[in-house]
Image (cartoon, rainbow, N blue to C red; front, side):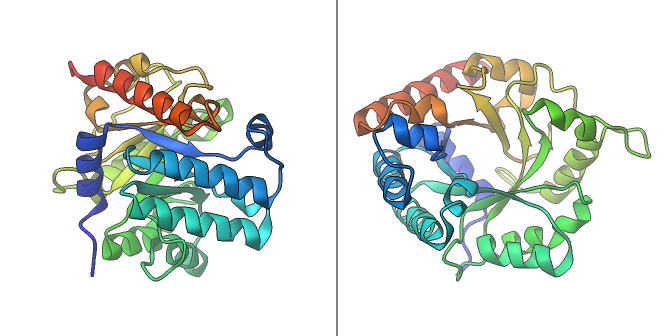
Length: 279
C-alpha cells in the first residue's frame, strides 16, 4: 500500500510537531563526550538514546549514514533498527546519504532507501544532482511510487560548494538555480507541498536564488555551524514556511540525558516557530 505523498506527510508533521529536523550524527567526539566507546556498542547506545528521546516529538530525524557505515555490517544493522523504531514512533526519517550516480547504480541506491521492502526504507533520502538532474530519475520515480521524498543538494553550507553550485550554466543561470527549477517542475501542482525538496544552507545569508519550488527546503547549519533560527527569514524570504531547519550537534551535545535532548529540541522548535510566525 502506497503511503500518502511525503510532502503532505511532512507538512502535517511540521504543523503538529514543529518545523525541526534533528540529525543523528554519532561522531567519535560525541560518543566520547557521552562517555561511550567509539565502537558498535557505543554507536548502538547513542542511537537508541536519541531515537527514544526524540522520535515521538520531532517532525524529522536525519541519520547520517556515513557514521554508521564506518562500523561495517554491524553499524548498518544499528541504522536499520533506528530507522524502523523512529518511524514506528511517528518521526519521519530522512536518510542523509547524499547518493549520486547514473543508470542502474542510481536505481540500486533508490531501491536501498526508497523501496518499501528494503530494511533501510526511509521517508526521504538526500541525493546529489551534479551528474545532471536527469541522473536522479530512478530515485525520483521510486519515491513517487512509494510515497517517499527526495532532498536534492542545491546550495550547501560548505564554502567549497560555491565553485560548483554558483557556476554558470550554458543558459546563464547559476547551476543551483537550474537544479531548483528542475525541482519546481517536479513539484508542479502538488498540494499542500511537493515531495522533492532542496538542501539550502542556513549559513548563506541571502541565498540569491529563487526558492519557490513548491517543496520543502532542508536547512542545515543551525547551531554548531553558526546559523540561528532568527537567520531563516533573511535566507529563505517568502519560502521560509517550507523550511525544515536541521540541527545536529546543537541538540546532541545535551546528551546523554534524554531530558536534555528533549529540552534542546523543544527550544530550537520554539525559536523556529517564532522566527517564521510573521511570514
